[in-house]
Image (tube, rainbow, N blue to C red; front, side):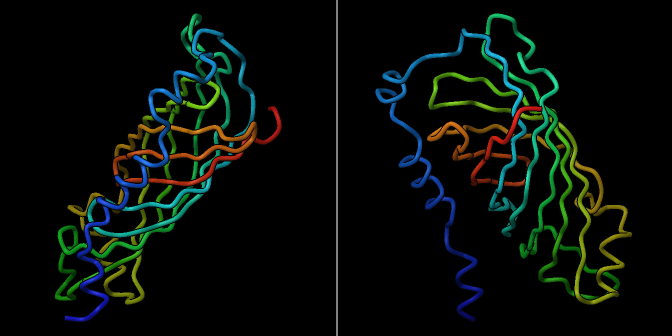
Length: 203
């Protein structure tokens, strides 16, 4: 068995969990921070995020997200929340055999995928440090492969749902270490994402 194949079998989720434990503030630290959840502030910044993906089914990826505010004061008058439209794109490399069909006799041990998500994202500003976010929407996935025959098969198989539209769900946390920069971690329909989010000028 090759070194590359053995590397794929390493339990990466143990490393992810350890990282989250170290990164997320303790209850004592969060409690000592200024609570702002009842302030009902207005949030009009354009947000741009750079995310790295660890895919549930086996794979990795990276992408961009852009958040455009549509309800700067959110939906709940007495809560410090915000609603935005989040659009993006990601380049993914999938290698798990569990989601790979055999395309017209071609054995597919890996493929690439372009993900194009569009979500309604809802942020809750708990403290100055901690923001909780959740999102719901749809993602258009376009698989491709260096072999033209395999690529054509991946796109036209009716049972290959990841080649079409899928429900996009996410739930995560932002750690606002700077006024315009946050660390972002989230679980989503396709895996675990981690990255950096930048708050640009007001819109």
